[in-house]
Length: 328
Length: 294
Image (cartoon, rainbow over all chains, first blue to last red; front, side):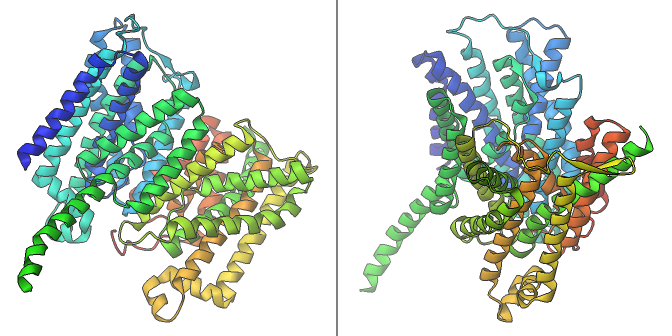
């Protein structure tokens, strides 16, 4: 069982690694980069919010922190534009974790639904800060050093770096899920009072989980900044980002490993494609909102959970059938 | 910085704050009765403002008279949203789910408003919008004063309903404990739907005042909802009095900080106050003690 699952994941990585070798059109590889960014972010978000049940709606704080780390260091350290900048990607992830620690400390003292609201409020502090402080360049944003890679080749390094980030986030998520620590997060989701009573250090576990989930999101933000070359506060600290990754994880299946990846892949590719095709953001908002409401009505626990439930039911039915025959 | 600037910032804070208090009261009422956080409240305020705008542009209906149409209309909108999407939410994940569902509803409305009204800013007009009178050297805009009076009137009506009517008793019973309320024969489901309608209906009035004191478009809703959520968390979620105190208090402090220090810090001060208060009182200023964790 474990082995087949592992093979599926290996196949998945292989397909994604092969994609830009077959499809050379920059339009599609660019969609690929964005899809990978959201897949990594949704996976990482799910590692805390999906497992613990504490829905965070301020994750673009980490994304933006990663993006600004990348932008500020490449600008101020006069770095040569190019592959060397990728060393700043893990640094962006670490910066996001440094930011996440005090946020978790403040926001995780409260009840679950208040936590959601506080993460939103903290998100707005960061957005306002990025708009108002001078070192962030205000609303004009920051321009990164221009990278002179040919148009046909430009997307590829970003694509593969992002694929590595996605794998890192998947491995982290899988390891957490299998560890004692992950079980503690799940226990918190199911019954926090009882987990506390059984000796789980709930506050420490929650803060650790929250901080760990910032890492890959920060890295994705750093890659994004380098990829687009110019960042604006309202795009890296974007309320729609916060919601999107939550909806993607939810859409695929909250608390599962494959769910967020699948949800993000479907929704982000669709969004990028629709935006390119119709260049109308409002249409996307309507489609996205409607799709989500439909999914929630028919598959209230996400795609992956929906199908694994069905499979389990089918398996249970085949198991039950002979017994019924015996009874005759 | 002088005393007149301070005085007029204080006045602005109280007058505008009362309107925020009204909108936040709707939000906290919904949460208290239904355990639902209505993230769509921000866009519903904007929808209310656009309704007033449409009435004004197409039928030349005065803003305040238009409220007679927009308030019932928003009440119906609330009931429809509740019946269609929120009624089916159950179980321990209900609150978290309600945030996602109402967020999706909010995107749906935002996209539609962008398509119908375009993304260009508009502002509601009326003869009273730009006019002001002065007491001493402090100027009072008519619309701000009218907003204050309207907010106080609606809040009083809400209080009258909650504390002097039979329906109010069922609402307060549901606020205190839904299971017990159901056990003594209160139709909690019906109370919930009506409360959601009422909580949304106040956005028509709030939206009208907001729309005539600010230029707005559909994306103004993000700023609104972040402030409203901060207000209800600060006041204590589910506490009506808390929403009122926090609403007036935060806008007041924000305006004062803007004058004394710098406008940059004015909106940030909201969130910084919130973070500090939560460190010492995680349940908010007037919130109930943490009885359960979930």
